[in-house]
Length: 249
Image 1 (cartoon, rainbow, N blue to C red):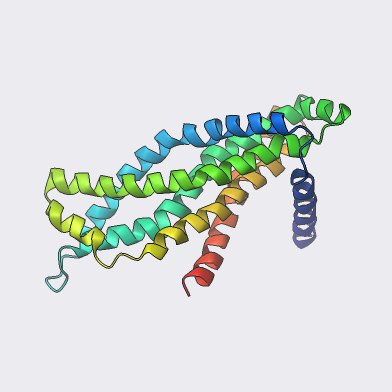
Image 2: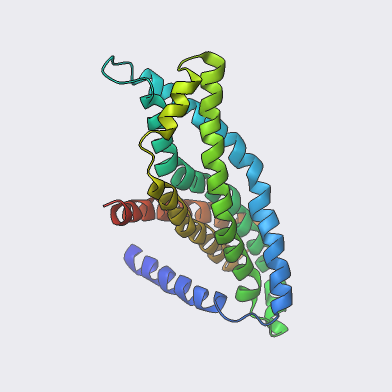
C-alpha cells in the first residue's frame, strides 16, 4: 500500500513537472515574476545565511581546535579541516536543509493558500497554465540564486572561524589563514555549487507540488508545508549520498 501510494505520488509529481516546464503563455509577465521570486526567495534569505554561516564557521573552528590537540598535528590543520567541512558539506547540504525549512515552507504555503482560495482555479478558467505561471519562476529563481547563497555561506563561514581565532586566540590568525590556503582543491568549490543546484530544484519543485495539490482549508495548507519540508529534506540527504559517490569517487 505504501509502495503503491509512493509510486502514484511520483507519477503525479512527474506529470506536474511536465506542466511546469512548458513554454510560458506570457513571457513578459513570467520574467517579472522571476525577478520578484529572486528577491523573495533569494535576497530575503541572505541575512539568515550570513547569521547561520558565521556561527557554524566559529563552532567548526572551535571543534577542530579541541579535536586536534595532538602534538603530531600542526596547528594549521584547524583552518584546513574547517575549510574542508564548510566546502564539502555545510555550504551545500546543510545550508540547503536549512533553506528547505525557510524557502520550502514559504512556497508550499503561498501556493497552497492560492489553491484553497480558488485563485488557481480562476487562472485555469482564464486559460492560463497555472503550474507554469506560478511554479516555473520559483524554480528558476531558486536555481539561479542558490549559487550566490552558497558562495556567501563559504566566505562568511570562514570569516566566522577567522573572528574566533582573532578574538579568543585559540590559533594564531596567520596560522588559521595558512591552513585555509594549504592543499586547496578548487574542485571542492564546484562540487558544492553543483550539488546545491540539484538541491535548489528539489526544494522549489517539491514544495510547489505539495502546495499545488492542497485540498481543504487552512489546516491542510499547514500540513502541506510540513510535508514539503520533510520530503525535501529526505530527498536532499538521498541526493547528497548519490552525488558524493558520483562526483568524489
